[in-house]
Length: 82
Image (cartoon, rainbow, N blue to C red):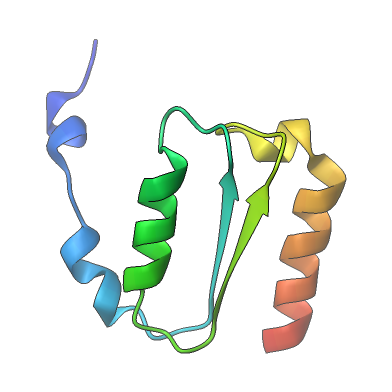
């Protein structure tokens, strides 16, 4: 059963209120959240400490298609802001 309320959920207006360091990982071939939307979300995050990393051969499940790159990106980000 599809949850229509979830489909209508839009939290993009809240993005400017995010002020913590933020890492955005996005697959270039993501069909669930198309790449331009991911970039737009990144651009609207309020934090001055933010990073976006594009996974060049991944879709939505980039942790499965590029697991080493995914793990390294997360670990590096954590190390930078711990």
